[in-house]
Image (tube, rainbow, N blue to C red; front, side, top):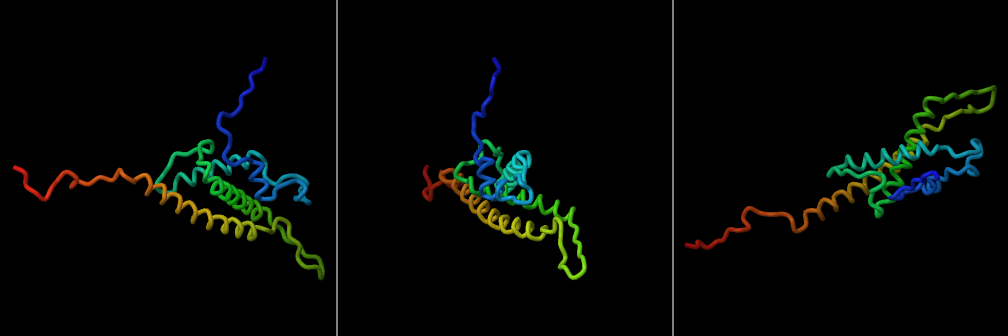
Length: 159
């Protein structure tokens, strides 16, 4: 009898949720007739987004599996930003524009600027939210634990 392993902790943001947010569905991709981003690319994007989140001070040691569920939106937009930025690199690398006669130039993979702009918009939102979350978490972790060297002193001289 084969042993089937199932993840103990489900992913905070699923591949289907990422694809739905980005509208990366085969029926929507007329030219590709498939999804644009493979599962491996989605997994890498989630890992790199969590890594970027961990690097924002105060640093944390989260993994995609134990990422806080209340911050799913942060993970979603960070993942989408990573994928769009990655796609902009491919667009730049493969850009070729042709023109024939009086016809306007037609480009193949000429959407690098559009992908970059979308990635920048998501990054701006991601930066603002992450900074707010990290600041609040840092302040809450200090609540009732901040000490003072003057705690056990008095204005009165006890002899």
